Length: 214
Image 1 (spheres, rainbow, N blue to C red):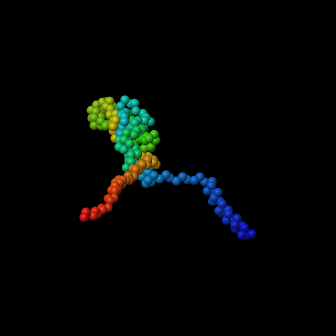
Image 2: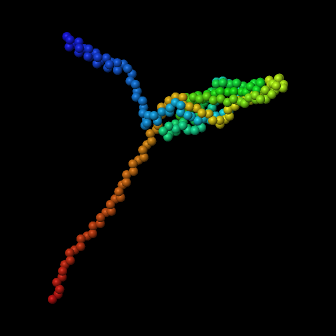
Image 3: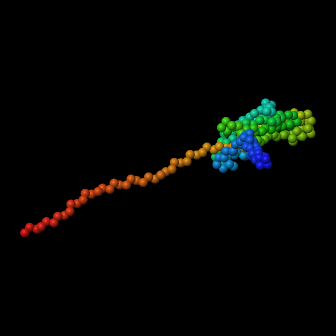
């Protein structure tokens, strides 16, 4: 009886992990392409951009949440291969707007980079930037000192980020890469030149000695 119980216990011990393994979904192995580290575009990778349009608070038309266009200024390489080409489109968003006002109050805007599109896929980017107009502080102080009312009518400058202005962004997520395998060059085999055919000369007839006449 003791042996039966032990055998049953052993059977349960062996079957239980097997049943658990059947119920658990297998975890797919990561796809390794060449060097694993080189096959991933890492978070924090620098992406040089430039503005494709001008942002300005002049005219008071700029709004928070407004999207704008950028483009990649320098190609991003991984393992010597281009993964984000020059000219790839990127999109940013205006996050803060302050229009210029009285008393020399200058305009101000803040924006963030959202994503870049490569081969139809959006890759998340991070990075914020701003541009603040120059405040005419000295002029305002002088106006207040001499004519208090004049300072009220002096306004600052509008904030502006012009087309072509450089903007630095960073990759905001790890992106697995799948490089296209380069077909190996066909092997070149040196074929020896065919041997020249051997020409067999016909055998010469043996010489026959003639007996001199008597």
